[in-house]
Length: 421
Image 1 (cartoon, rainbow, N blue to C red):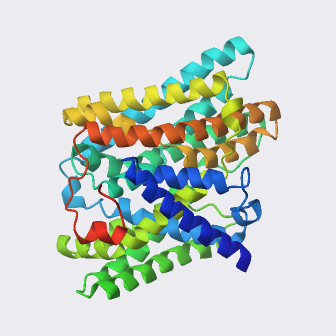
Image 2: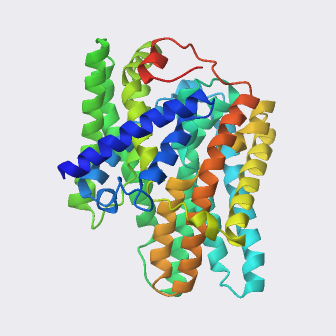
């Protein structure tokens, strides 16, 4: 175990300096973290070996970091600030979600119809395509201190988008399972475990956290208190995962989002800013390790194997995300920059897509293993190609929207160790 911990620490150090190097080229540091993950992963140099990636303690650490990462989203969900734009964000999220699902399902439905492949596989592709990996875009927001309508729309949408994706994907997966395998957990049970339970855990921890964090304290004390509360929230999640539930099913990022959204509505705006400033270095670490983990399982050789299905998936998903965001923003009267560029910030995908793919492939293997192979190969190749392109495009979208480097570059930026050159 000591050897594996040292491997992880070395990988994190290499990722950090690679991110700094990439930043010198005016590209997002996340691109360096992602590429280092692939290079050091089990399919290349193997520093981040399969033994490490499957270790139970490693997944425990990742869960805590994901819980901490949720603070970036949840802290933006302050009700008084959402009253003016909340309806617009919800409507736009629904538009882009339905558009993405419809476009991807339609493209694959036509191809599969003429190829003799079961049409339900097109629905699975559509359900997986809905999800957006929030970490890449949010890391760009932090690194380049973006501020403006696109940023203010993206952050709360990151929370809503994955909730919609969970509902749609698990609904489809449960229906296909029931129709073909004749079994599977009831849909309402799945959704309760995936959405309601993590939110309830996070809100419970956040209610207590609000009482603790609303009191003025030094930066170090605030940081320690926040860390302790995150560990408490994650600990509650571990209790349900390992003691109450038959198998682990909780989304720890959703726990962190609910936790921070609850305490954010119980403290003053000034105090919330102090809490997030104190937590920024730990947030940066969480983002870096989670992104490193996203890159590690990706096999660079899949680029050569990516065929027509991979190209169709990347293209149709991008078209769905962009057109849906544009139409939703237009329908709700959001600013012109949101209409033009929001969809481009929603392209990062790999982490959530790979989780959904693993679940769907497990289902398909019980009655249609050939479709499972098609699904896994397509999404794995698409994850690798799309993630590199999506990070670059997302950064350019913020640049075109005129939102880069808009926040003050004082102590927060220094604490993060981010380059502004």
